[in-house]
Image (cartoon, rainbow over all chains, first blue to last red; front, side, top):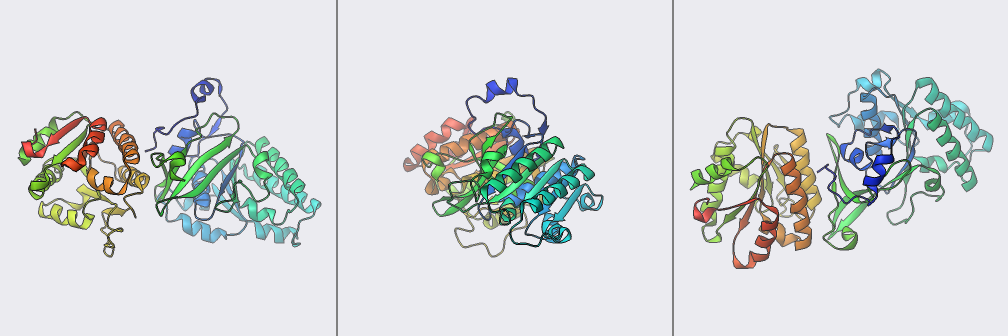
Length: 265
Length: 193
C-alpha cells in the first residue's frame, strides 16, 4: 500500500525537478514516498495529534531507523521515563537493544536535566530558558546528534508560558539544530477537535513542517489518519493516509474518499 | 472442475486480478472447488503462500476446511474482518490478523501489506472472500476505490488476487464494479471457463 497511489499535490512533479535539498530519510517507506525521500535535513517538524494517534511511536521509529543507518539519535522525554519507552520499543521487530547499549540511540529524561541544572521553578525565567537551550545544544554537539525528538513540546511549554518566549525558544532551538545538521521532531499534543496544531498556536508558524495525526470516525469505527500539512524545502503530498502501527513499523494506505467529501471525516 | 480452475489460475500472467464467480445455488460445491484449487493445487506449489481475507466466514471456519485439505499453517495466513463483528473472537488463530470491522477497508489493505512484508514469499496469492460481503457493509463508491487501489498495488507486487463473487440478479452492480478492476473472470459454474 506504500506506493504513491494517493492523490498528489498538483505541483509535485514540477517541484521535483528543482528540489535538491539533502534528505533525512525517515525509514518509514510510506512517509518517505510522500516527502520525496524524507524530511529536508535540519528541518524542525511538529508532529501534532491527539492522544492515541501514534505521535510517539512514529517519532521513535524515526530515531531507531536513523540509528540503524549510523545517525546518532536523541530522544528527550519530558513526561515518560526512558526505561518505559525502551520497554515499549522492545515490542517492535525493527528495534535492537544494542542501539541503546552502543550509544547510537540516546534517551534523556528532561526532568533529570531540570534537576541537575537547578531549574526547579514552575515557570522558567528567560535566563533559565537560555540555560536549557545551551544544554540541549551541548548534547547535540558533543554527541554528534543527527536526529532529535522532543516529546513533548506541549509539556515543555507548560514551563515556558508566554507566547513570545515560546516563539523565541523555538527560533533559537531551530537555529541550533539546523546549524548542527540535526533533523528534529517536536511532539505536540492537541485536542481531538482543536482546529490547530499546538497549544499556543505560535509553534506551527515557527517550525519547518507539520505532520498532523488524528482519529477519524467512520460509522463508529476509528481510523488513524496522517497528513503532511506543511513542509518547507520539499514538495509534498497533501492527501490523507490511514496508518497502522505494526511490529514491523508504521504502514500507510490512502484514506479512501468514497464515503463523501473528506473521506468521511 | 477443481482441476480446471487450477489450470486456469496457473495459465494467468503474473500479478493478475481475477473475479471468481460462484453460483449461489451450488455455493458449497463451488466454494470448496475454489478452496481446493487455490489452497491445495496452487498453494502446495513450491514457495507459494496464500493470504485469505475473510469477510464472509470467520478465519477459524476457513482454517478448518483448509486443514481438511492438508494445508500447512505456514502456507496460509488470514486477514479476518468478520470475527469481531460476529463476536467470535475468543480463540484467535496464530496465523491470523484481525480487523475489527469490514468497514475499515484501509485497515484490510494495511493488514495485507503487513503480511506481505512480514512473511515474504516468492509467490503469493491473495483471496478476498467476498465482494458481496464487503458490499453489505460499504457503499459502492468506497468499495470501488478500495478494489482499485488494492488490486493495482498487488499487481505491482506480482501477487495473484482472487475476488470471490456470488452471482445473482441483486449483485449486478457489484459485478459491474468488479469487472472494471479485474483482468479475468472465472465462472466456476462453467467449469472454470
